[in-house]
Image (cartoon, rainbow, N blue to C red):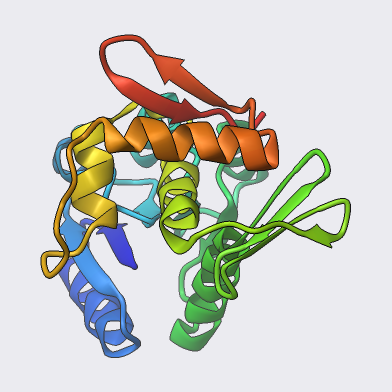
Length: 213
């Protein structure tokens, strides 16, 4: 899992990155808003975002992120003003942590947010990505690992149009024989057929997008 931490205080940013790296996360650092948006991409799984940062403030960065993705965003700030909290949640932040804070508590919040991504529920469908299982109305459905890995990638990037090449690059490992990109069409067709996922839409001349709503 890759986390983007956006914080202008070097000591806090590097301390957070070191602590979370030791916990198994891959860290990407940004010290201000412009850099944060430049480094934000479809490989990021969670963002830790300070509000008071140079050039583009944290809330405006959050607004830009929400135009592209529903990935978890934790707001990190010294402000305790309720207006800031309301503004953060209005712009779909997933959590709010005030400085000073406990690293262990922050990690627990991160783990909890990322744990949510291990399951996917849509209408009468329930998918568990840890056990590689899928159920409809509680009944187990026969589905293969690659289908679920593609679904997971679409879910992690909900709301973003992903090309077939992006899906191939993310799902197929270097040690595996990579198929032609049109094979993705077959997997998507199977996902729709087996699980009735009309939330996966085709983006003409681009690829596919999952709409969680």
